[in-house]
Image (tube, rainbow, N blue to C red):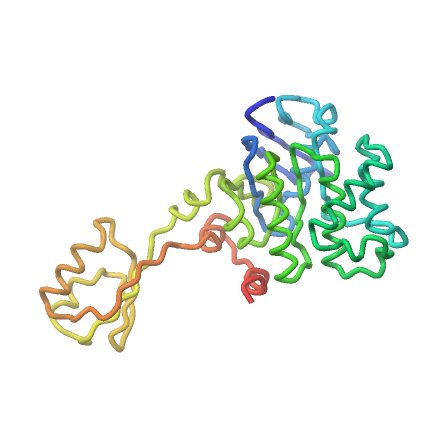
Length: 309
């Protein structure tokens, strides 16, 4: 099997003459977790659908496990679309078994695996209840279990965390990590940066239909300089001249960009000048900050704040 699970080059999709996706390229190694990040309407869902063969690109090509026709690799794929859909009168066991049957499992094997998955996810007690009686988080977990019941080698998840509370988001993250530990590859889209920062090894940032960044999370964060927070014992003196030009602050609290020469020359000058260093902290930029810089527009951090609550 190919070392590259997903590969795309120059994908373009037009809708009524407008370029919804404009030259997207990416490469996802097998066994990795890769995030497609972007604001709502950036073209993430259209990109995923082209990768899966649900729709065809107007330009460019894509391949799943080396197969240029994605539909030929369908048995290896588990897909969770952004639009959720379960029959409300079915039980979780039967719903997961049904989704397994669509991927070639027998009804008996699908139900057996369904019970195993439900028990493992802590949902064994609701296995025989109508889905309409489940909470949103439970129902979304059931749909994810239906996505993995046939043991796919590639999971493609479109905004899988949307609408979940912090506890169910963390449970879903655990399920994703467990699948990767079993050898699966995960490609997921999200506008919630916190998930990508914790889960992903590499990310592709899409905005206005085009790729703004493709690389590791660390590389994205390193695009921005680190910041320094400093607290001194004295509030003034000749040592003030050693602080970088962009320094802001008052009442002995200072902030400035980490100089390219490092923090050591600043520290030497502060010590020599008798500033009295009480606290010093160097902060690397977050992925959220890097995302805003890449996309060129502010994003609402409320989803990230909810997750941290």
